[in-house]
Amino acid sequence: MFDGLKEKLGRFRDDVEEEAAEAEAEAEPEEADAATETAETEADAEPVAESESESESRSTTAETAPSRDADSGTAADAEPEEPDRGGLASRARRFATGKTLITAEELEEPLEQLEFALLQGDVEMSVAAEITERLREQLVGQERAQVKSGAIVIQEAIGEALKEVISVGQFDFEQRIAEAEKPVTLVFTGVNGVGKTTTIAKLARRFEDQGYSVVMANGDTYRAGANEQIQEHADALGTKLISHQQGGDPAAVLYDAVEYANANDVDIVLGDTAGRLHTAKDLMAQLEKIDRVVDPDMTLFVDEAVAGQDATQRAKQFNDAAEIDGVVLTKADADSQGGAAVSIAHVTGKPILFLGVGQAYDDLERFDPEVIVSRLTEDE
Ligand SMILES: Nc1nc2c(ncn2[C@@H]2O[C@H](COP(=O)(O)OP(=O)(O)OP(=O)(O)O)[C@@H](O)[C@H]2O)c(=O)[nH]1
View 1 (cartoon, rainbow, N blue to C red):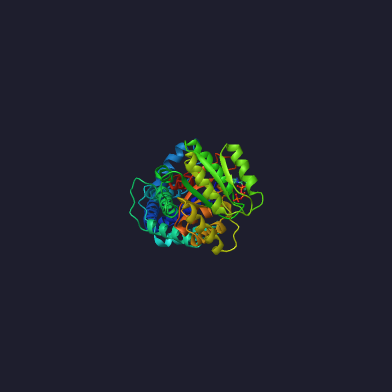
View 2 (view 1 turned 90 degrees about the vertical axis):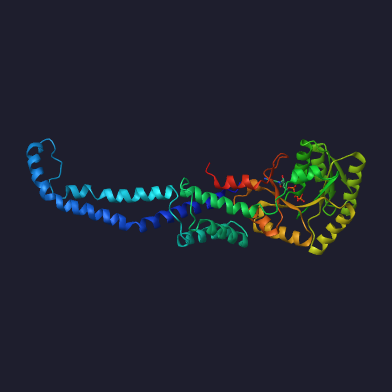
């Protein structure tokens, strides 16, 4: 999941490290030159003294050490390594202990490349800009704790920047369900074919595992075969389903489901709706009617992570048309880029609550920004 995104963030970290090390190398030539000069002076000064002593020693060691170069540059050849090695080592040490400050100039190219890579990975433009801006703010010229290596500082900055954008609007879903008056009614919206029905079935399983009782309602009265499809899930899960004939009123189906829940002490109503509505006006009219008739506790928008930029735009359109409370992103298991996962909350102001991570009923994960960020930034 999101491997492509992880790789891009890792590449940014490496680029910044490299830039910082290069800049450090350029900043140090005086130190290195001074050391080289000293070494050269020593080397220049030595030949005379050495040639005497060497000629002496050569007379005794020539046979045993024939490879030792008799030329007066011997000492100088050996010496120049010293200042260079010292320069590199101290550079490495300074960066590794976090003493190196990264300048805006050094960050510019890695940031540009990261922004481009994020856009290519379907991260929405304003979100890519927000991430790079946050990284710039956090990394440029910051005083760093000296115990932290440069790499860790960059990794933490990436984590912070990501967390800021993906945590927008997060709330404690479980607590809200627990505290809400029963039955709790959740309505699901979104275009067809993205896994809405499967998601409702997965949530039914999850709630039942948590000890709640559930009734499902098929408000997708528009699509032929929708009843049969959701019925299959209801049968597999052993969950009650309320449905009407095709062409019926979705609000009436949901009303019946809430009535059923009230009469049978059922805790949670999960209502599907038809997503294939041609205009925002239709969508709003449908959801407004549902609002009036059953007053749902939450309306959740479902889309597929693999749709990337399209999923982000649809989430925005649905939220503009009829306010949503949160998002479920399906097929995250098949999504390498993570563009929608990173962008949706920031663009809509509504949190991603769950990720669909496979086709089985248990393949539903709570969207936890902390967990997502550590997956994306930490080395395996
Ligand atoms: N890999 C993967 N497949 C999923 C996930 N969620 C749903 N699917 C699959 O996506 C396909 C479509 O899902 P459905 O729930 O049938 O969606 P739909 O009925 O076409 O459309 P909706 O009207 O949105 O319900 C099915 O084959 C599901 O198994 C997921 O999280 N990961």
